[in-house]
Length: 220
Ligand code: B16
Ligand code: MG
Image 1 (cartoon, protein in one colour):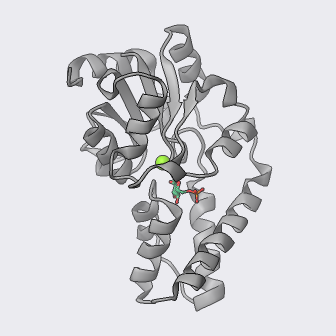
Image 2 (image 1 turned 90 degrees about the vertical axis):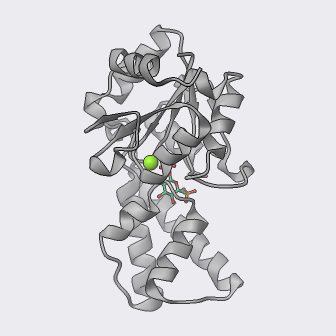
C-alpha cells in the first residue's frame, strides 16, 4: 500500500447534509415540491449536474439548458454559504488520527472528491497540508460510479491505482474505486457491502485494518 484516495463529503466531513438541504431549498422555491430522504443516497458522491438530473427526473420536470445551469449555480451558492461556518470541529471522528497515521507510515494522500468545492472545504477544515494531491473533478470526463476521479487521484501521486486504497461513503463511490482497481474501504451501512472492507463509521477506521484489507484484496 503506497497511497490513499480520500472521498470528502461523508468521509472527512459531514457536508452531505448541507448539500441535500440546499437541494431541498432550491426545489421548494422553484417548484414548490418536497424531496424524500431516499433521494439523498442517490445524489451522494454524484456530481452537481448529475444530482440535478436525478432530482428533476424524480420530479418529472424538464427545464431548458439555461434554466438548468442557473439552478445548479443557485444550489452551489446556497451550499457555499452554508460552508461559511465550517471549521476544524466539523472533521468527522477518527479522521485526523487516521491522516496522521498515514503520514507516519509514509503513505501518500490524495483527494478523490466529486466536489468542485473540495479545496475550499479542506482549507476550512485546516487539512490542506495533509494532501499530496487533489484530483480536479472538472477535468474528468465521467463522474462516480465511473473510476475516473480515483484514477486521476492515484496518477496525481504517481502511484498505480493497484497500490492504493480508496475510502468512500457512497454507493457510487465504492463502485468507482472497484472499477479503478484500488482496494475499496466503505464507511456506512449494508448499502456498501460491495466494498472490499466496510466500517460502520469513520471512528472505526484505522491504519492497521486498512493495511490488512489492502494485503487481502489488492489486485497486483
Ligand atoms: P459540488 P464527494 C460529492 O462529494 C457530494 O457527495 C455530492 O453530493 C455532490 O453533489 C458532489 O460532491 C458535487 O459537489 O457541487 O460541491 O461540486 O462525496 O465525492 O466528496
Ligand atoms: Mg462522499
